[in-house]
Image (cartoon, rainbow, N blue to C red; front, side):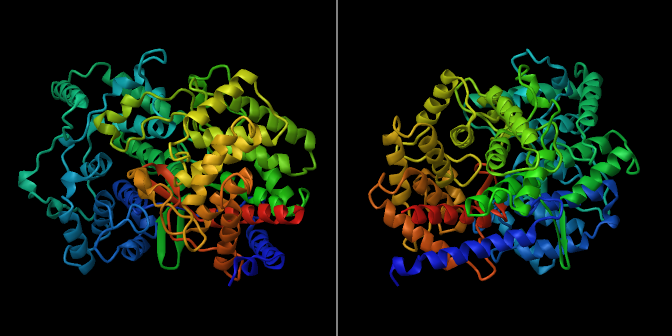
Length: 638
């Protein structure tokens, strides 16, 4: 069938209506949309560990975790970091640990398969630091093999070359509680008591509990770590108790009324572990709230219990409202209005951690989650502002004031390189990624092309404007970030398709004439990596292997991103762009289900490049609707 037969205005209208109806039927009565945020099984495994340590496991349906973990084990015996990756060592060790804590025996066929897979990859000694730390909490690894985190770090002043605010918001909120845990080095009794000796490939008696050497300048940190451990052994750690008290105070001050810390499970789990280390009781209201917050991130079905790493209602709602309006619903449609008014209630008017490095800024951003007043983020805020600009609310004066306040906050968060980061300003001390503790390479939050592009798109699509000099700095930064092939890196989405889509959307609004060559190169790259089936896809492996840029099985979300970028650039900016757009739209029409949804197994969201990936269950719903809506407008204009 020819593409023109597969893409007709009638078919397009039907597909858009079906997708719109799906969203209209799934809106929460209070106004928001909220899709599952899926990650690998370690988040759930660590929740099992937490409840075993607290002795609160009997109050949760953890028996369903066993069913969940069994369902996620692959034929090779391991568990995946992202869909189809062939299995990952640390993820598999933590899943094995959780199953054992749930009473599954070593001779169970699933455990035998898992053990074979784990040993083949080197066993526990080859896992990441955080996996080893979790094992040390229950005596399955030695604390001597864990990097020291001296509590006096809490006392370093904000003006010192290093302090806790030089870490990214997610690293900070996860690390401060670990200053307490790593200082006390607790070994908790759990029921059942387990060992994992069978997972040491070299034999448990031959394990060398030491940090790996890299053979370069970063080995200096190992010397420093040995010095820290020496002072610990002699009980000569300076300002030890003062640091512990400061860390405890910091944790308590940052707990939301809902019990959350940082809006992410690692910060929540680590904070609860710190309180357990300090001797808090499970009945303490602070602990009770914290445990309830973890429960709120859980999804329970008839035969499954799993925990999300985070929840994304603000992000999801903003994009769904935008998709509904861009696909033809009026800005005053009741569902759109409910969504817009709900978003207004979630604006953060409190000062958060961002103020430490940005004292001149005034609050006004949005966060990702239901409640996260300490950590609004630039990306969410820019998307919410663009969404609100599209809707007609009963109180337009309030809406406009909220948008202006948000815009001013975003403007104040511009980094010295010209771009924007997610949560902080000038959070870019890259050496932190080289410390032994930072083996996930996610210790900082520097400005990135995708977040910068989102801010520029916000500026280009609204009546808001920043100082001309700062605007040029931002555009120059984005241009500098363009890769030789013509694409842009995607920090928060997989990967270059995501980054390129955002950059083209921004440049075509903010500086189309001045940077026509850059736009053409970006569009040409998107055309070049279209798959034979008409879709686009990119594997998470492209973060580690540059030869895989833009390569992967087609997905609805990544196809939509490519289409959004190409349509922003215009059909004539690259050879074959018009045909590529037609084929991409045909792919979306052909793969849509009768209920108006698309299916997608692949992970197209990014937590930490190379180490942690996400599957947003609404990405493959609202991005295709935006793409189809924009295509329909182009055809109706033509």
